[in-house]
Length: 150
Image (cartoon, rainbow, N blue to C red; front, side, top):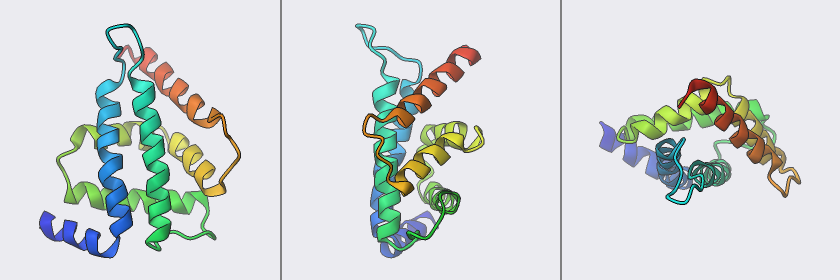
């Protein structure tokens, strides 16, 4: 069944499938680096999460190329389609459980606020060249981590 789901996604949504094969491992890496520092004390999570955001942008672009989303859609509609695609992908490729758990914890359990901000930014193609939205989201996640004692 998983093989058929993979084949179906590759055939119908080739660009989105390819983008998700990069996004989900990036989610996994971010999950594994949450709260970790390098030998010299450098934060490992921030660059990993920035990679998630980069791949998220590629994924949204790929969804547009595959015709899943269009310019007339709102950020909320894009989010809904994105959740559907990630859910389908997670059923086809269930081996990335830490990545999916991180996705759920950060993007779903927090009332979609982070994902909504990112998608809204990507959909509206804002001029936030210094990535203040991404920096705020990372700061919020790190604050949440401290509050939970992770």
